[in-house]
Image (cartoon, rainbow, N blue to C red; front, side, top):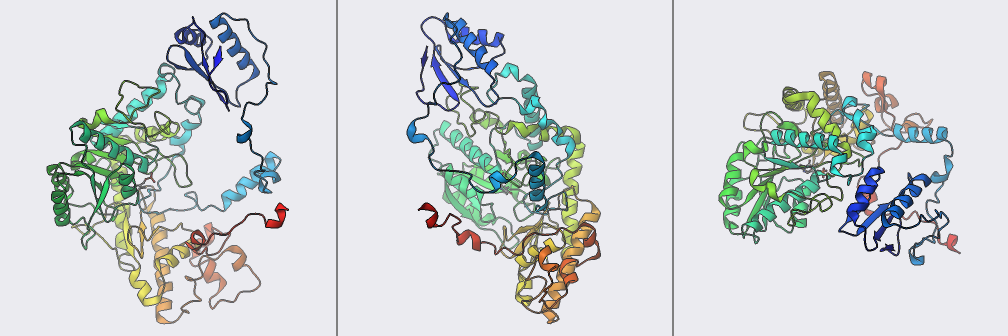
Length: 578
Ligand SMILES: *Cc1c(COP(=O)(O)O)cnc(C)c1O
């Protein structure tokens, strides 16, 4: 039997000799509970990994020998390594002490715990990062992902061996279609940004199917998330920026002008709703109509779905495609680079253009693929499934109302001290708000950055900094936070405002003050030497309740983007190469 790949790491590719077909091999393998990868009538692949045992290898030898009518060869585990010389690594790697220091489980556990203690997380306090929807990831929702039935399945497992998984995904797609008011959903994209790219590719494929493949202009409002223009360019579109007005809304006049000027080449608009300015734009339906009238499609960025679920939907406003961030609105944990899921939902006319996957579906040759695995990050889908099923329609709608109520509560409590940059026609925000800090910089020299750093001394993670508007903080409490936690945040922000007032009045120094020096790490506060014009207690325990749940930082202020722009070489000195 012929092996077709001359070099290999963990996957072998064979052609069967004349006679037996892959169909015969498949049925014999299935009888032994073995899955191989089959292609065409005579080729198959075997993938091995660290879980493959000697007994598995013997089973494989028996299977193939019987199938092709050959003698069973002896298992030879001493076979020479087949990697070509030029691919073998000659340099050392992972030589740093940390990779060798922790040699027992006890030591490893303490090391990992030590790292964990440096991390300010949702287990300490509210993380009010605007646009990120840092909501509760309930234990009951996450329970199932560690079950081997979900965690141990290969993404290319034959469909009939994964019927339960598929039942869950079919239901989930139907639920997400209902929530978005659209016709069907693809679970393949692995992030919101990947969803944007996929959705735009769907729009392109649809235009092409109508003989309008030349449509390549994407209108994007100035308030958009940075991933929007980046995805548009990756999808081969040209970006035309639409202005926003003084209230933060898309400038409809400018949008209409641009849509009409480009009407022969307009592919789509990418619009976030509610906007990244945290406002439900009342003109959203009119906006969608203008785009449709000029031959374009509406891509709705669904990162802010937490303000819509159960109350309105992309379908109601007139969008054709939207992505959802299951790792924002739908309870999958994020922050720290875990697997994301950015499914796209599309209207009926676009269903045929959804991404496909050649391994599981070769009936639609025109389809494209955006993820190596057919259902993307399928391993974390049980979290969203659990979230939707346990909340139910009423629960999800209630959560949306609470998310909006919480944001409006913070807006009304903090308006007087900071100012809320944008609100809607009725003076309300959506599920998040932008606190204006620019006037404080003028009056005191204290910036939004100093406020963000100072919040750490109070035990809070910073809100979103200078996005989407420079000099501001964007706060999104989510429905998960209780009134008492919101009140703690309000108290901290008011206390910080009083600290700023001390600088304004001259009672505190312009540079040596609690804000400019924040955050205050443990070693600094407890050191024998303290050279500041204010006391240690004010630095570390600015409010009485901080004592109860003090989060001690391990480092002081890191100078923002300085480190990104001034690279430091940590390589070994040149002498070490002698
Ligand atoms: C988070 C976000 C995205 C990108 O989603 P990722 O999953 O991080 O790729 C896009 N648009 C908006 C408005 C967002 O908040």
